[in-house]
Length: 384
Ligand SMILES: NC(=O)c1ccc[n+]([C@@H]2O[C@H](COP(=O)([O-])OP(=O)(O)OC[C@H]3O[C@@H](n4cnc5c(N)ncnc54)[C@H](OP(=O)(O)O)[C@@H]3O)[C@@H](O)[C@H]2O)c1
Image 1 (cartoon, rainbow, N blue to C red):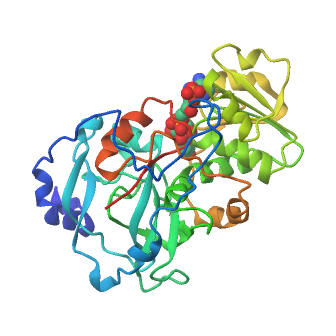
Image 2: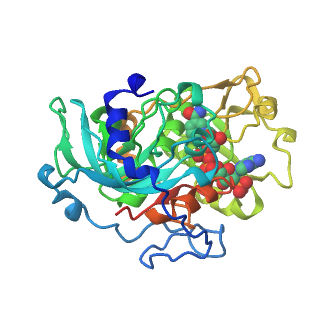
């Protein structure tokens, strides 16, 4: 087995012998302790509170950026799994080798990370055939501070506050050493400087979802003056599709679906028409749209409400023509392009109010994401 593993994999296994010692299972609790500095809630979603994203900053980079390469430890805490399965396969390990940095990579001291459905689908073994080898440190989304740079890194330097989706191809050989760890190594091209107005929690909530939202809109040929229906408007991707369609692409009309309690939330993001999918069938609407963006897996119905010659983008589930599916390609360029919209506050990072989940509660964060009821993004913070 070892002979087919890359040197990095071998290093991981060698250094992580204690991985074999089971970490004590964390206590599953819904009423977990929350950091009182974190006030996040969304208008109309969880009661009558106003829409608020993080008003207070996560710890400034100062603490983390003081870490010069000489003070980088050789071992770190990380969430891992050594076999595919349910949340029970996740283990918090305390002596995993800090990843080596390749020439085009930087080492990031992770401050916050976010979960995506692909994290649990991958953990369940759905992409086994194209996955990187086990054991795995899960996690695609990261926000943190550069503590080391590879020899061919051009722009980033130690101390830079960065964010990104660390796996260029989500399903095809995603990183074995993910972001649910104290350190992660990432290609410079997948990263961007963190928008100045966002803290690390907010920044971690963006990369994979916003890059998917943007790539899907581009692939659908969405442009100014067109109308769009977003299926799953309250989720990580859907909440960004609504905002990008309205704020960046200049949509003439944005319609979106959600359950009853989230209608006000999707309106607050820019939806002109909020459709309660528990009461109405969107496919029975008389209106047709230039683009239907399906983040739920309802392509068969989505194609019924697209205009002749329009586009139906499907992120998941079976595809019905003329719908098409794509898998996001991570690139820091999208984050850079969207930076003005993020820094001006036109496009907001939306952190699910059940979080952020502290690092030792990653299993709970996964369980919550897997309910398919998350609003915006499930973020993990602080990370030791
Ligand atoms: N192909 C790609 O490159 C790509 C990239 C990213 C994501 N994805 C996939 O796209 C899907 C969405 O991802 P995500 O990150 O947005 O997930 P997510 O944040 O976990 O989505 C949860 C949201 O889905 C909404 N929802 C569930 N059932 C719904 C329904 N029938 N109608 C309308 N809304 C519904 C829920 O709202 P309610 O509580 O109101 O139901 C909840 O707010 C996942 O399957 C993911 O794997 C694919």
